[in-house]
Image (tube, rainbow, N blue to C red; front, side, top):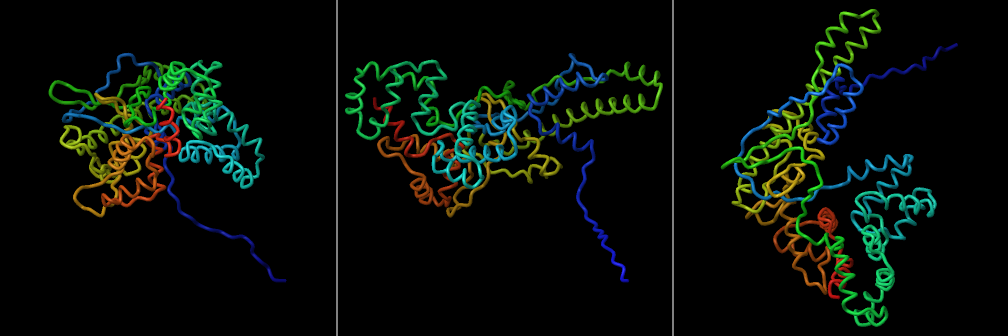
Length: 430
């Protein structure tokens, strides 16, 4: 009888990070709010950590003058953190991600898209609507709506102004868009003062915020500050309450060890405490060196000699400060910088270069977004520019970008498509 050996052995190699390094990278990726929450949790869990009220942030380096830094911050990370409260399963999370990306590009939920999604993912249409109703309650408010009417209704309800007059106004908006202002006024039977008051309420509630210039984000807590000091500026990593190690308690506990289990627990907690303090200092010094390097390269922009940012890639920054490229990406992820003109995403200081047929100057995604913003701010109100027309305008400047990329940049700026902008412009004529 022939003997067969069914045992198969295979050898593979893959990088394995040490536990201490994984922990340091985890701390590096946190913004100040997340880090402070983690520190507070560690203070409760680790008896060898104590609050350090005398801590003073010494991570400061001077740089040259700083002017405008402008780019909106994405709220994607903040949005998906809220999903955890719904306890969605993996399929629902996947559908939520698809809905989020669709709404970012198209602004509103489309019935055809939902039907296709229902067939593709094997979920009923009613279940999709249930998911959407939950998502509509999340921040930022006003997402996952079906049309401009829903958006206006949502804005008014959020501001407590959705009374009878406003309900009539919203219900009859299709008449305004299809048949014009005269037919709309005749149908709703409102005088000019009533209509102007409703429109003023919508403006005050922020309906037209998406057409403004690059927006600041004052609600974000900064991780780094660029502050004017006399004739120069300082870069500072914003201080968090770094805990200290209770050395006296450590010594007393080590003297009173009664079993190997106690010894293992005590040494483990002491090691965790030392690692946390070390990781926080590493995060601060790394973030500071990165921002200092970026600020140095953007000196002309900061001093007002140019209105454009030069392209900066993470690899070159990593080479300059002698660290790995992935460290740069981790350090600046979801972090903000406070400047004399507001709080902005650090990534805004590292725009990507876009190839241009005309080599007169370097083109970045920042400059293209700024051009799109200016173009839309000055577009004819009765005939807003479509994404295809913006592509044509850019080609005239020697910049070749696809329509889909234009839509992405427009959504980054939180600007609606041409059809929705036309409807909003129509409202402003009242």
